[in-house]
Amino acid sequence: MKFFLDTANLNEIREAAELGFADGVTTNPTLISKEGGVDFKQHIAAICEIVQGPVSAEVTSQDKDGMLREGREYSKIAPNVVIKCPLTRDGLKATRQLTDEGIKVNVTLCFSPAQAILAAKAGAAFISPFLGRLDDIGENGLLLLESIVEIYRNYTWKTEILAASLRHPVHVIEAARLGADIATMPVKVIEQLFNHPLTDKGQAQFLADWAKSGRK
Ligand code: E4P
Image (cartoon, rainbow, N blue to C red; front, side, top):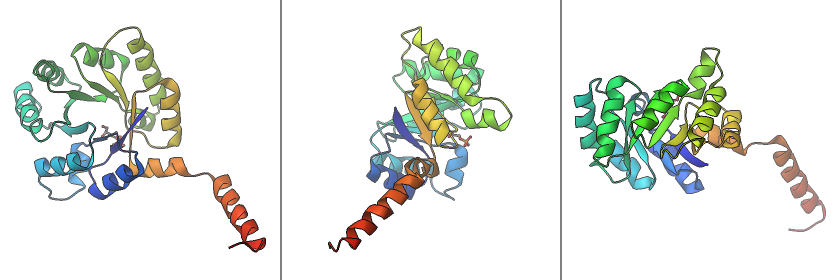
């Protein structure tokens, strides 16, 4: 399973890249706005200098023509830019057109298996089911992921399943168990994956015993 970073913060991306955990990056308008008044295209270019893998840049137009204009423009920023289109009628029309032009599309805001089927039929390179946001309204995001994995396995669609809106380690572990192609997560979740109290305790004990034995 590949790890994408769900952030637009350059320091966080550099840090995760050093750890070898940045196979790609997903941004969205909210994440970009957290970086203040940055120039969108320059900022995406800066991310693409750090990360070799796919970097998602999301369109903000609502209509197909606007999405196509943005998608064509952003795809020129760097060869690894992927255009993020919303799972709307116009978003899927734009997905089909951009895909036909050789531009990869990440279809975002997926909340049902039916939507995931439509995205694959439209030729999306990635489908992003939002697990955490379903959990937030009392549904089970992992059940959505499970359904999509099951459905996609029946066909030879090229669309990769990108588990998104991951909020904690269990989301990541279960996404891996289900066979998601990619998990995108904030740096905070990557840090949580490291942690285990028995590792800390064991390490402290080893160092104490070593010191007690008089070795330097
Ligand atoms: C994915 O591409 C989205 O940017 C992201 O996972 C959304 O996560 P959130 O629901 O925590 O905002």
